[in-house]
Each structure stands twice: as structure tokens, then as C-alpha cells.
Length: 304
Image (cartoon, rainbow, N blue to C red; front, top):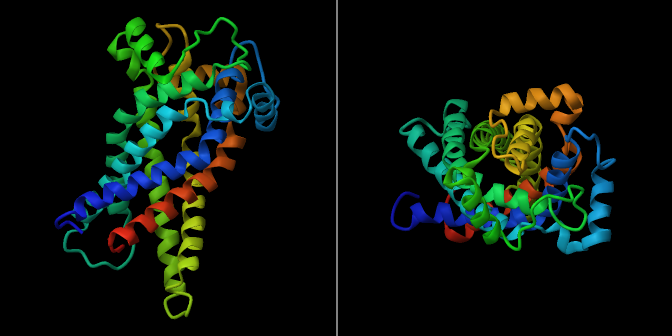
């Protein structure tokens, strides 16, 4: 795997996983971001629930509205997934060294996933800031004076012009926390589920079936995604608030932001967008794992 083009194949497979994630999950993400922004404002709740939010977007903007900010999301997720899956695979291979391949090891999985998460947080922060700012505007936006951007590029340029280069990295601490913890949870759940399911099928005729492999990928990736987002959603809420606030002097400590949200909206506020996030987590992460595993097979990469 580490010879010749094998090193790069891991990153190509990861890129395909990212594209699949956005194609399936972006509409749910748009609903999540709008709920996080508007339902934690001091003015009170804006949307009754995720379904109400989605229906408002469809009524006023159509399907296109659900894919607001998708351009930066496709670019960001393709690059991010390429890095996270590639770095994770390479770090895991390095840490395993000469240890026997006798199943998943948390002392290998967790640091590999957290290392990858830390690296990609620097890539994700600017792209997600642009994505979130594009998502909360639109004809259904309930913040009438909020700045309108013509495109993701316009959003990035205006952000840098008004807030400086550091402005595009607003929300970096929250992104770092979310990615380190989230990826550690995701890959741990995914690896253990995958190992135990394949162990049960070791002597079965179904072991080498393509549909069975796809089914395992859907199940393990989906549950891994649900576990991941259940653990890190509060960090994601803090990130959205920090990145979409029009005030340059807004609080940027994610823990202080969450404390403020909890005071005015309770635990429900810290988990704003939970519905669409969980609904999105299963299909989006299932698509990512299926695309990743399929790409690795096509590219001739052997899984441990």
C-alpha cells in the first residue's frame, strides 16, 4: 500500500468519499445550519423543527435553496475527506508497525483519527465559514439586515476585506475540537463494527458478496456517523454561531459560547439542529464509507 502510487490512492479514495458525502448530505446540512443560527438567537425560536425549516426553504427557494453553499462544500469536503481518509490510513499503518493484525486497536485508531482531524480542521474552517454564511442567507433568511453574498468567492473576499485574513479562520478552535473528537468516535465505531461483522461472516458464503460488503459499509458508516455527530454537535453549534455572527468582536471561545447558549436556550439550544443532523448522519456517512471502500477496491488497495 505504501509503494508507488499506493500512497496517493488512499487520498483519491478519500476524495470520492467526500464527494458522496456532500451529494447525499448537503440538504440536511443546510437545514441544520439555519436551525443553529436562527433558533439560538436571543429573539427566540425561529423554526418549529427541521421539517418546518426544510419546507420553508423549498417554498421560497426550491431545491436549489437546500444546496446553498454547496460549491464550497464540494471543494472543501473533497479535499477534507481526501486528507482525513489518507492521513488516517497512513498514520494507522505507521503506528501499527510490526504489531500483529489481530483486530482493531484503540491505541492506534484514536490517535490516527485525531491527528487527521487536527490537520483537516485548518482546511475545513475557511470553507465551512463560507458555506455557513451562504446557507443562512436567502429569501427565507429571518435576519433582514444580514449581508448578502453573490457567491462563495464573494463571501470569502468580503470576509477577508472586512475582517482580515484571520477572519476567514474564525471558529478555528470549535472546528478543531469537533474534528478531533468526531473523527476519533467515527473511526472507532466504524472499525469495531466492521471487524466484528466480518468475523461473524468468516465461514459464511456471503463473505465475499459485493452487496454484502456494500450493506456492511452502509451499516457501519451510518452508525459511525450517528455516534460521531451525537458526540460533537454542541461544538458544531458553537462553530456556526461564531462563524455567522456579523459582529467582529463576537466571543470565539466555543466553551463560553456554549455556556451562553445554554443560559438562554438550555440543553436544547446546545443541540440545535439535532434532528436533521442525525437524519443526515446515517445516509451521508454510509455513502462516504461505501464510496471509500469501493474506490479502494477499484484502485487495488487491500484493507486490513
